Structure formats: C-alpha cells, structure tokens
Image 1 (tube, rainbow, N blue to C red):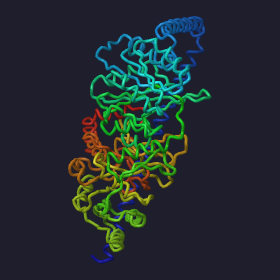
Image 2 (image 1 turned 45 degrees about the vertical axis):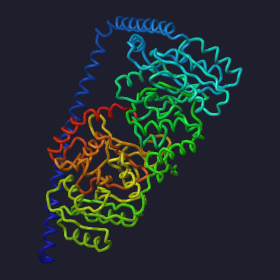
Image 3 (image 1 turned 30 degrees about the vertical axis):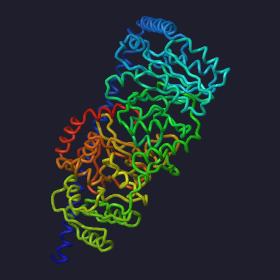
Image 4 (image 1 turned 90 degrees about the horizontal axis):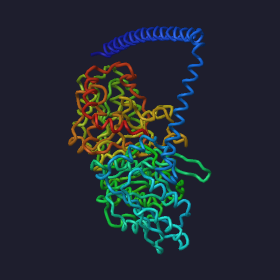
Length: 631
C-alpha cells in the first residue's frame, strides 16, 4: 500500500471518528434536554406541594386545632422526660459510682438486654493492668469502669509497682470485688515486666490489656465476647478515645484489620482482647521495646493469625499517648519484619509520610519485571508513558511489552517503531483480536519473560523513581497477591488509593483528595495498607501467584476483571496491598473513554452480568468490608 493510500485511510478513519463524536454530542444533547424536563417537572411538583402546605396552614381548621397539637406535643415531651428519669434512676442503682455515664454510649434497653443475656458459654476475660505510680483517683475510676461491665465473666489482674503509700491506697480499693487480684512487683522497671507478672494471676480464656488510668465503657467486654463466642475469631479490638488535660475527648476510629496497615502504625492500640491459646510464650510482653511493648505484642499476634475482629464503637478511653515513642515502635516493627520476612527486611520512617514503611529488598540479581501495556492508537499517550518509564525507572532488569490491539493510524506505527529503536527494553507485540482487557493482559503474560508482571494502562506517567523496586518487592512477598500504587490526576489530586465497596458499588477510595497529608483529612491514603481491591490501571503480581491463583477472567471484556482477581486473592487468604510511596499520574481512561456512574457507555451488557455474578459469589467478603465504617 502506497503512502498516499495510507494517508487516505487515515483521513477516512478521522472522518469516521468525527461522525462518531457528532453522534455522541447529539446523544448528550438529548440527555441534557431530558434532564432539564425532569428538573422542570420536579420544580413544578415542589411548587404544588408548597401551595398545598400554605393552604393547609392558613385554613380555619389548622388554627382551631393549634391548642390540641400543642397539648399532644407537651404530653409527648413529658412522657419522654418521665421515661428518661426512670432510666437514670435504674442506671444509678445498677452501675453505682460509674466513672463513665452508661447512657452516653448505650440506651437503657440495650444495657438491660446485655445484663439479662446468658453468659455461661462466654469466655472468661483476664484484664491485665500494670500500675506504676498511678494517682489514686484515676486508679479508682479504672476499677469502677471494670466492675460496672454488663458482661460479668471477668477477672482484674493487677501488677502494682507503685511506691508503698500509693500501693496501700490501691490495695484498699481491691477488696470491693472478689474478681480482683493483685501482686506487688516493687522491682519492676517497665510496664512489660508488670504485665508479665499480672499474666501469672490470670486464669481466663481471653487476655485483655488496659492502662491503669484508662476507662472501659460499660458494654466493652460484652461486645468483645460477642465477637469471640463463635470460635472463628482469635482477637478483638475496638475504637477508642484520647483524653487531654484541657478536657478534650478525641475519638480515634479505626479500620478493619489489615496487617500492612498495622505495619504502618499501631492503630490497634491498648484494649486488645486475645485468646490465651494464641500467645507465643508465657511472657509475651517484651521489656526491650519500652513504650513500644504493646505494638510489639500486636505485631507478634498478627504474625500468627489474621482472624482479628474490629468493633467499630468507642468502648475505651485513655490519656493521649506521648509522641516520643516513634523509635521504640520502629524497633519493634523492624524486629517483626526480620522475623517474618528475613534479615534483609527493615522498617523506615519516610519524610513527609504518615506512619512507618516496611521494606523488603530483593536479593541480587533482582528478578526480571515485565511491564505489560495494552494500547490502540493514541500513540502520543503511549510515548509519554514509555518514555517516563525509561527515564525515571532505577530498577535494573525490566522489559516493556506494548500490546498493539489493532492500531490503524500510520503515526502510531511510526511512534511504536521509534520506541523499539530507542530502547532494547521495548517490544511491540501485535494483538490482532477484538478488544478484551482480560484476554489482552493474559496474552501479554504469555509473552512476558519476567518473574513479576506489572499490568499498566498506556495513559500513565511515572513520578517516583523507585516505583518498580517497591512494587516488585511487595508483589513477591509470600502473603501478597497484588501490589499497587497511588494514582494521581495531573492536578495532583488522588485518583486511586485503593478500591472500596460502598452502597452497592465499587469506588476509588479518597478520590479528589490532596496528594499530600494536610493534617485535617484521613491518613489512610498515605499509609501502606491492605485494601479490598486495586485498579488494573497499574498493579503488580508475581508470575507464580498469577498462574496458581488463575488468570484474569475473560468473561469480563472491559471492566471489573481487575477487581474480581483481587477478590479471588482475598478469598484465598492473600493480601492486596496499596503502596502510597509509589506514585504515578493517570489520565484515567483516555485510551478508551471514561465510564460515568449511571451510564453504561462503552461497557458491554455481559460485563454487568458478570459483575452481578461476582458480587453474589463474594457477598460475604463484600458485606464484611462494607460494614466497616472507618476503612
């Protein structure tokens, strides 16, 4: 075919695209007109309702019945006041000396139901408390908060390292309840030593730790016991509140359990209830980590089990923790990573980040990484994407596979040829079959030579130079199936920070939020953590897991195959890890257009059928994720 024929073909293709754009514009105009008509009809309906309301409130009947309405309202308020007063009297009798007002956190009906519930088959909680010069009023409030639990099967195990006078004052309080026991540990230098001593007093099935100046809310043990009763849960934690000297009370809401988010920060906190059978020693609290002891305890626990439940209610409060525990916690995390992943793993605190970052350096020579990029025309996008990879990537051994899915423009062929000539890392691979995202990427995996596969859109641009190092080291972890980065819009707002399931839809988390922490919003976009799913616009998998778990489901043509793969991985017990220290720009679907909520656009009906089937298959996983209000 001559160059003139090629130019004529390009012109015909461009004219066809122009006609398609015109048709799309006309379709949008019709939709706009329909929306305007709907708005006009709704405005008319609102006007009619307002007129009816005015007619009613201005009528003689409305004026005549005004005294009756006021009397009914007064009677209702009086009944509520009587009911509230009765509840308060009952609470004073039932929870004498309560440090935490029970009705502030649960209504009387809930408290009565919990007190009446049978507890003979419930676990016995051994609550461990380390006391080191805790003022007597704060200690008394803590003891009161335990005694006033709606769940009765508990024992309070106290190890007291206070001075003699304070210890005597503490001892006088302990005679109030036979479920309280205490031992003196005058030579203990750390809270960990006290807790290990308190553990020797414990006879319960479940161990809990609280501070000597903290408060348990009345329903705390009942909620924890409800999660532990079925036997499938090994540990439970709750939301909590920090108390400040100026009287402020600041709630700390927590996400569902994620091992990687625990690596980023100790979000579990102090009130953690653990089955005794899950302890790794008779002295599980390590004094070597100082104020990082509770973090070390939580890290050791998560290395043994992921059956850790979250109660999304504030059930515990304590004085705000000091801000000088970073180094102790960093040492605890570093020791945990080395135990679990080998001597090369380490923890670091990154400048400008939130929390800690686990690193898993790969041994030399590093495994080959294959970057698989499907594309069709839009050659300028592909050129920007490939050049950013070649210019910014520090990783030594990688290849780029451009899967040409039927490009038709001569300019595309020239640019692809130039890219192949520019670097021997680039291979252009014809993919001459109808577009199917899943099939394209499975085809690319067959052609790839790497041990790590990075699936990537052609409308991406690399920002961080070590992006491939971090994706590869996480994808090759034995407990991880998929690793993915933070994706940004060109205006430096978040496009993707993980996928969540909310109100029956899959959505990108924290979309349009600033790409840097501003001290006001959530820290979750800036912490490495496990997520429900990651977008297929850019994520990495190990070839071994890809072949073992099964490839992308080719029944999905355009959308949701990436999410289905992540759900399959989660169901198999593997993690899907979001890595915010890896950043790329994403123009979001410039290659094929953009799917807008409420419009099917270019997505075939078969994908929606597969979506419904997928949601039904993973219903339990999706429901458990959606029920966490704080993720």
